[in-house]
Structure formats: C-alpha cells, structure tokens
Image (tube, rainbow, N blue to C red):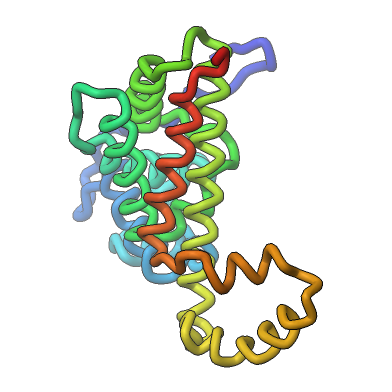
Amino acid sequence: MTTPYGSAPLPVWERPEPQPRAAPVPLSRAKIAATAIRIADEHGLDGLSVRKIAKELGVGPMRLYDYVINRSELLDLMVDAVYALIAEADQHSGWRATVLAIVHRTREAALDHEWFADLLGGRPHLGPHALAVGESTAAALSQAPGVRGIDDLQRALGALNGFIVGALRREITERRTARLTGTDVSAWQATHGPYLTRMLETGRYPTVARLVIEGAHLSAEETFRHNLSTILDGITRDSQA
C-alpha cells in the first residue's frame, strides 16, 4: 500500500489470511490472538513472546510470522479481540445509558485482561471492533445535551477517554500492587494510619483532613461509578447557561 509517508503493508485486519498449509496444526489470526491473550492474562505483556505462543500452539515460531509481521501487529489483534467483547455491551435508546453500558463493559474487560489497560492511551486502536466501539460511543455522546457540534463532541470524547484510561490504570495498578506485596487497603491503612494522623493533627492540611475524616470511602467499583457520573454530568451541562 502506497501512502503519503511511503510504502507500507496493508493493516493486519485488511490482509487476507495466509493460504492453509498441509500441516498438522491449522492456524489463524484469531487462534493466535486467543492464545496470546491467555498467556498475557497469566504472565502480563512482559511474559508474552512469539516463542511462547508458538509452543502453546504446537508450531514453530516462524509460522506465526506468516500471520503477523511483528509484535505490534500481535498486540493490535489482541486489543481488538478485547474490543469485540466490549462491543457486546447492551444497546439502549438513551445516550447516557448507552455510554454507561460501554464504559462499564470496558472496565469489566480490563479487569479480566489487565494488560489491556497498559495499552490504553497509547497509539490509536484502529481495529474493526475498536472502531465499532468508538462509533457507538461517539454517536451516543453526540446526542448529549450541551454537545452542539464536532468541537463539543471532541471535547466530550477527550474528557471521557481521559477518565477511562486514568481510572482503569489506577485501579489495576492498585490490584497488582496488592498482589505483589500482599498488602491490601486495610493493611496499608494500618501501617500508614498513625503517620497520617500525626500529620493531619498539625493543622497544615485542613482540606485533606476533611477528605480523610468526612469523605466517603468507596470501593473501587463505587468510585468508578461515581466519578463516571460526574464526567457525564459535566458533558450534559449546557456550557452556554
């Protein structure tokens, strides 16, 4: 394919599958992606390699390069397979219910496949299922009060996507830390609570003290729901009022 930036291969989603070989193990991009996802779920992206995938499939590593040119293409296939799950979110007639369904489905997918959060917010995800999710989200947000044109829609999408990336990465980082250290929230609070109490009693941090003492201490899911509602409330608000 010739582009303004020079010659480039067709994207992995547009290249036809290689012709089947007379080999004991049939392969496909979907099968390779599914195997890669299982490995990444267990070992993370750092533990993912072509050699491990090939061993799991019972083939030589070089056979995989008939289907994906490099690791980036492999990750693209894996990401789009997760977006296929997100695309299964229930469709609703109202814009807000549709967005809520998509975003909560995204969180569920990220918690099931933690490596997915590591790939959010990087280069654009352009696979067919990622585009389908993006279309559904953008179409719903375009119906929100206060979204009058393409500029408003871009800002709304930017705010929503920024929240999703930050919230999911933080939640998954906390989960990983708890697993690695064996320290959950209660244990962390027990360790650092006395120090924090002494600092707050100095009176130098009155607003932080109010947040700690008076603020609601919600679960990760409750926090996600509450903050998502805040984002959507802001998108709904008439900016001209």
